[in-house]
Structures are given as C-alpha cells and as structure tokens.
Image (cartoon, rainbow, N blue to C red; front, side):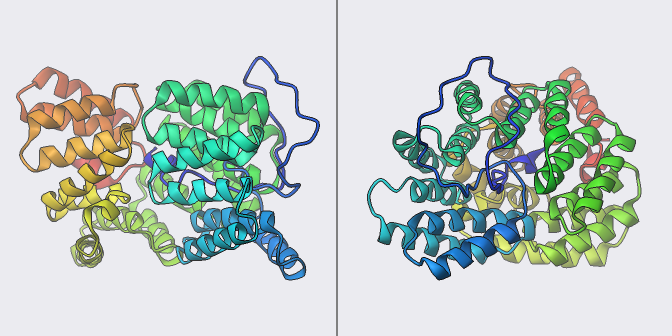
Length: 425
C-alpha cells in the first residue's frame, strides 16, 4: 500500500487515451491545447525506453525544442521508478534547465517537469505550486493535472484531492486519472470500488499502460486475499513485459502472502540487484530474519544503517521505510528525527504512521497515539498502520482497542514483511 505513491507513480504515455469518465460532467475542450503531441502523463505506463529514444532523437535534430527537453525530463523521472537508476534525476534536472534556458517565460512543459522534480524530493508544497503555475497557462495539461492530484494527496489534503480528481477527469480522462481515483478509494477503505475502476481501465489499456494497471490490480487483489487472481494478473504482466520492475516487487510480496519465503527471498534479491533502493533491502533483510538467515539479514541491515546514518533527517525522511527500519532494528532516535522532518513536508497518512511509530519506539507512546489515529483516520486498509496503532495502544494498556486493531492489521497483512506479521502475532 505505501509503495503506491512513494514516487508518485509518474508514468509515461504517448497521449491521454481511454478515458473512463468517472466524472459525470464534461467541460468543452479548447480549440487548441498547448500541450505537445508527445505527452508524459503521470499514471500511464507505456514504453519509456521508446519514448526517451524518440525524444533524444528529436533533440538531436532540433536541439532548441524546449518542450521536448522538458518532456524528456519527465520521462527520466519515471524511468527511475521502472529501473531504479537514480542517476537519471540529474539528467532530468539538466533537461529542465535546458528547456528554461531556451524558453524562460510561459514554459508550461518546464513548469510541469519542475513540479515532478520537487515531488521526487518530497517538496510537495513546491510541487503543487509549480503544477498550479503550469495549469494557469494550460488548464488541460494532463501531466500537470495529475501532479496536482499527487501533491494534494501527499500533503494530506484529501477533500481537495477528490476535487482535483474530478477536474482532471473532466479535462483529461485516462489511465493517469483512473489509477489515482483507484488510490483515492483505496485510501478511504473502499477496495471494491478501487478494484472496479482498475478492472474497467485494464479492459481498454494496452502495452505499458496495461502492465501498469494490471500490476496495481494484482497488488489490490493480494491485499484482499484473492491470491489466485493476483497470480494470474502478474503472469499476464510477465508475458507483456518480463522486465517490469513493479511486477517483480509484486511477485515477491505475493510469494510472502502464499508462505513461500524462500522464493520471496530470491525475488527480493533480484529486485535489489536490479534497483538498489533501500526500502527493498528492508524487506529482503526482514525476510532473511524469519528464515533464520541471520548473517544475511545482518549484511542488509549494516548497509541500511550506513545509508541512514549518512543522511540528514530531511533526506532520510524521504525514505520512510528506512526511517521505520531504524526505529525497529537500529537507532530509533534517527528514525524519529527523519519522521519529524517528513511530517513538516507532508501530512498524509504515511507520514502520520511513521511519526507515530517512531515516537512510540523512542518511549513517547502517548504522543504517538495521536499520530496513529491520524494514520488510520480514513480507514485506510494498510496492515502496518493498524498493527502500529494496536501495538501503541497495547503499550498504553488499551487492551480492547489493541486487540481489535492488531487483529484487523493481521487480516490485511497478506504480503507484508513476515517479520512484521510475526511481531503482531
């Protein structure tokens, strides 16, 4: 659940297509939309390699095409999600700078790319500001509409999130909006409605869009206990794109859900080899612990501690899974400093959960309970939110609520870290 928007799912498409029409009213399209034919639409999932190659070829021919430079920046940002190469962020920043050098005024594409780069840094107020600036120039720009939804979501402005979604769906219906609607429903505990949106979207999606939507749907089915359905969806994604990293991560969690921990460890090893994101090492290390492979777990944990202690609190706060790891396995005070820094940047349910748990792990359980309640205020069906709340309540002697919330967390826990499940049990 928490990985749903950790990197805001900034995916790529060649055009907005296949609108699902969730909004009931439509706005007239302008006579001419300023967005280019080649669009990067957060929430789609098409062939990034082909998009990037096309943009680079265009810029070889027309090096002063400011729109293509900014669009290339968005594509680089999304490619990091797919292949884990964080070095592409530097290329994205260079591409935006080049676009603004060529066209410093009214550059809607560069404003949108700047919004995406602020979002990557978890500077969500700035991400919202640049998305708004882009939309002031072009109210129908699909990427800016999607990034505005993402920023409001991460800031915890959930009523505004729904308003922004309705506007985006009227102006630019498509995969980007559909996946965000599904996440909005999921945040509010309506998994059935979220699944229905994704299934409808998958019917018309093709190529990378289809791999993206089917992977999200597989994750949702796994959390609902529909393990055979999740396995079938992930098998289809493998046929579509054997190298699609989000699906590999989903397969690892499905292996945990079906109690095949040796397979889960092998899959997490493959994930880490392909995309050395620290949060993947957390899940690999905790899987090793449950398998009794303490030496291997220790290797992962030492790497994580070295990584975490080398960052300032604000930078570590962007890696909430690593902050939680520090609270659970190493130095809770480092985890708490990171969670506090992140709470200053965004106040959605993931940040509330992290701050509550790290407060608890540093002996501040009464203060922690307030944030645990904030994390569960929408009824979000994330197992760890409820497990954390239950363990905090248990420490405060609130036995009845603790039992209810731990039981609910375990009911939702299919596929989460087996070490976290064991602690809740």
